[in-house]
Length: 155
Image: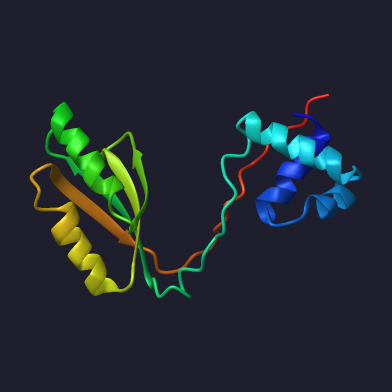
């Protein structure tokens, strides 16, 4: 990845709707050169997808929580069932296997506390596979970004 690739990735992370002609002006290339570079960056896996980031507030999603989950069993069938159940829940934005006191960390959004409570009690707990949960409801977002730190340009 050279300096121009890095510049393009930085620009695309902040606004992927920019036309290649606009990107070209910003990095000093032609639109066709930008198009080829972006296609190569996609093919090489640097760009996974181009998406629209939606507003939680505009969608009425007032509650965000992080939930640490400790499993009751690590039997392969139990773990697969948990993974399938969690993957099907649209309120679960992220599920990460972690080290430490918990096995998973979930990022969950819900319309309100009542919806969050129903999700916890009906979808997460009560299936026999979860030993315990520890929830932290977000009070205020200090920093939120989707931009990843980019490696230094080579060459």
